[in-house]
Each structure stands twice: as structure tokens, then as C-alpha cells.
Image (cartoon, rainbow, N blue to C red):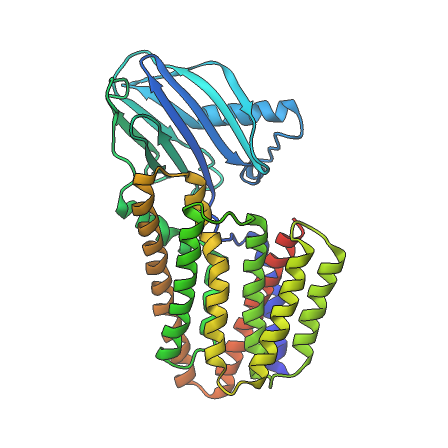
Length: 400
């Protein structure tokens, strides 16, 4: 009972701090630049959620909308040689999909030739923010701008031929994938929940392989535009996957009673009946059926490791859609899409393997160096904390 009490405290503490933990969806924004001899047409896009970092809501008033436009113009700058390009008129709000803000403006440059794009957007409040700039021409090229590399030189930007610009390389997309996974607290929480009960290298390999194959498939489908899932539903389901696997850990250790499955299913049915938030009722009904079947199979199985691999694969399909957000929003040209997709996915896998290579040996060290009570304490406390995070993300994302 003492161990469970400690686990409960850890879960409550995790709920308190969960609001400060970021999901794997990075802080990002986008811009498109079309150059001509006298300047450039600029179109910038940023989510309303990102603007809340600065307490800005362009839908609240015209004043707030104008402030967002001025923010974008100040943060996204263009230089012609050593001289800044000046805005003509003021930025104009353009039609945008739900949850996004789009502004366009015209820049006049004092001379022809090389141009340099610089982004300082949101870096004061979100140092890890990434800005995806694209130069549109005969051959469109994109570049990821960050705090480490905020500027991008485009040579011969006003030449009659396509401008010379070094876009984001294959290696930079690998780096982006690594950063994406290492800053994605919800994905890392899911991986840790899987590892807590893994008893052998073979089991770890099975879990990681199933999860990797699944999220690689849906990442590709989403980025290629084959499937267009609702991002809000995907994010809520990711939270559910974390909570369910964490609860499953404690349930297996406690003897696989009936209380946990019944409470989980009842909660999902309540959500379905209430019909609150962005998640359709049918999704909650489907989750209730999935949960009932999953716990029934686990309860009857003498080797739950195989079923856990199947669950890792099933939820990996959901996580893959979450990973796709960054690349899908870029709408890359076909000649840039394949290397970007492959590099990003490779980076995600390398980052994931690095986490597993550190976390699982540490868990095994605890298991071998201390008695079973300490190992059980680690698993129960870790599962309670991860469950707290998963529940927080699931509920808040479902009700958003």
C-alpha cells in the first residue's frame, strides 16, 4: 500500500506540472517568398495557439489583428545586400483555415541581386521555435530557420533564371527529426510506458520495431497527402495511448482485476454521452470497445508481451499522424518531399533509439541491483506519473 501511495502522489504531481510539458508538435511557423526585380511578395502563416504565447488573439479585435501583422513584419525581415527592404503599405490579413492566421505584404528592396531572409519570430518566448521559409520560383526551395541559424542567403534572387539557394539538406532533416522526438514529451512518455515492464532485449526489440513500423507508415501517408486526419483527434488519441499503456502496467502488476477496465470503459462512455469537445462521440465509443477487448485479451493471455507489441503497433499508427504535422504543413514540392520525409523519419528513429539505449539499461540496472520491491516501486511510480500526463493530455485535448 505504501508503494501505491507513492505512485499516487507522483501521478498527482505529474498532473500539476503537465501543463508545462509540450507535446511532440514543435513550435513552428511558415512563410512563402516570391522575388522580383524590385522586391518580394511575402505570405506568412502561424497558428493561433502559438500567438497565445504573446497574449495575442487576432479574432478578438481589429487592434489585435493589426498587432499580429506588425509582429510578423518585424520578425520576418528581408535584406538586399547590406540594406533592409521596406514594407509597402501594411500587412493584410488573408483567409486561413481554422486555427491559423495568414498575413501577406509587399517588400520593396533598394537594389537587385542577393537577398537574405531572417526570422526572429517567437524566439524570445520559444527559443526552440522553427520557421519554415520557402522561396518560390522555377524550382522552389525551403529552409528551416532557427535560433542557431536564423538567416538564409539567396544568391542572384532577381536573376531571370531560378535563384541560387541552398535549402535544407538531408542531414538537416535528420537533425530536425532527432530534435522533434527528443522535445516530444508525449511520445517519450509512451515509449517509457512500454519499457517499464519489458523484461528482455528481445521484448524491447519487438516493442520498438512494432511501434517504428507503424508510425513510419502513417507518417508517410500523411505527408504524402494520402490521408488527412483531424489533428485535434490525433492529439487526443495520443494522450489516451499514453494513459492506457501506463494503467496497463499497474494492472498487470496488481493481478489483473476487473476494477481498472470497468472504470476506464465507464469514463469513455461518459465522454461519448456528454459529447464534449472536438472528439466525435463515435471515437469515444470505439475507444471503449477497444479497451474492453484489449483488457479481456490480456486477462486471458499467459504471455502479455505479444499483445503489448500489437498495442505498440496500433498506437504507433496514431503517433505517426502526430509526427507528420511538421512536414505536412510545409507542403513540400515533390522533388524535395522524399528526402525530407526519409531524413525526418530517420532522425525520429535515431532519437528514439538513443532514448531506449539509455532508459532500458537503467531500468535493468535497478532490477538487478535491488530487490523486487524496489523494482516494483520504480514501475508503479513511473506508471502513475506517466498515466497522469496521459490523462491530462487526453482530457484537455478532447475538450479543446
